[in-house]
Length: 302
Image (tube, rainbow, N blue to C red; front, top):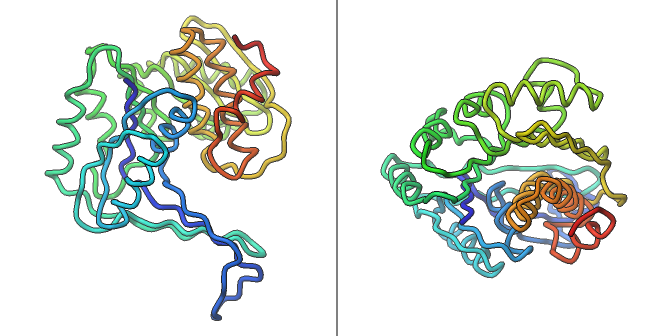
């Protein structure tokens, strides 16, 4: 089973207001409400592809109940732990310019943290755990490390989509997959990385620190993938018009996992990840199976 962790999920409320006027009453022309959070995005795309996963994390108040109900409507399995407060609401205003207002989220008490670790203790050999995003202020900074340490040596595969210190500190636990983008890879080494050769060089350095597989997303330029056996895959992105980049990286992770566990092939995983990420970028929200398969038909996929 695949498990995803979202510590600070959200309800993402997108509103269209054009023109948007500060200091005045504005009326929306259109509104949309979606569940939000990197791990949640991974689970929704997996579900769209027909692969089950279980969402772990925390929910709070009536906004948390609404979030969980939405996840059930999308067909996802959720074991979010209820806490006091309110699950945050993130507001995206689309006017002459785009403005984001992100909520802070609830405090996560020590007892709820213990309950999460109790849930994780039930993971079994062969399971996959996706850790994605930043750590909320109410959790210890070493939460990712503590999770990896607890599960180390039990045959559980870690997928880590994080940046900076968070990523560095989990490398000794040999994550199955890490997925920085090209800019984040450069920030890890304080370098301006531009060429495929440079990407492969620094990806190998991450492998030397413990990562098994390194997938580097390059936006419109596609992706580069260095496998644990040293094979390099690279490809430009499928052609299309960028509509919304939010969730594209999470979709790439979901597509990769789907491709790998369906075929046990790194090549299939790479191309499915690339197609899933691109399909989300070309549409208003997370990609459907049909949208992903349409792009995949142009690649050597089985």
